[in-house]
Length: 408
Ligand SMILES: [Zn+2]
Image (cartoon, rainbow, N blue to C red):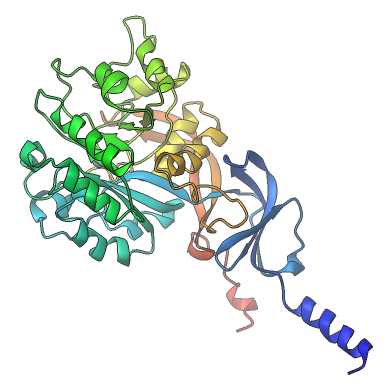
């Protein structure tokens, strides 16, 4: 073959084969891990982030989507949900959980962590029924109670079923998806639930998340965050009304900052009854910010003040927390907290889990667990969500061709 023909064929084929599968063009990228908050193009190939740069030519991609009036963020990570739906334990667990795919992509979420709906006894069922069958990436914290939240509500009071060894064994066997231990809803006066949870966390080398449930003088909250939990362990329900947060003058109590300095993580875990304006508004003003923002999604929170991940994030924006920090609390921070540092950012090579969010201006109202309203003028909505490079949600069909210009 003549050299000039070979050269022609090579260049011809190079231009006919775009380098990227998909290009998100002109969005404002917020990527806390990589310290980016600026207009950038994001290119995706084979389900992974392939390039993030100032100006990537559309001709380099098979398909280009204009996202120029949107924020482009890593797919959101909601680290407190309850998604063990359809369990045979109908009384409590099965009917309080939801299926993840019905709630995630439509609010920019690509990864959820189930916070202790299952324990070592029923984790296998959870894995088979939900984790392995969901389009959402589902990770889990094992309840320190073997039955998890299964059966009657008092199942979580059964200290005989709090077995650190067995819990750690199952956590290690499923270390690809088990990311922590959950302690929740314990009402007794002793520290046994917390301490067994921490023991399991030590054995499996994973963090513990605590819902402190009934606050009792025999086990003061201050001791939980200053003594019993380890650095890297998580207290969820940060702005619950029962947390000793403010002194008589309305100042945030110094021990909370001390606990943060120790490395204790404060997660929002909004839920049905765990978020109070009277705690959150003064705390945010005084820079007692959450480390991560999560929903505590379940049947009693989904239609109340919580609603969804973006609604909870919007509350923090309207309380004055900068948007970049709010996004960090829903992406890179939770990914780091659950030791899954491959998630929550848009580094080249990372899974292409991406959210394209619109910050809408208008008259909005946000409701807390006491059903009190705070008015606001900003709200995040999810225009488009990608999981592993595939469009899994497009509110206004921005990834589709217009019907009257369709080529197929
Ligand atoms: Zn919960």
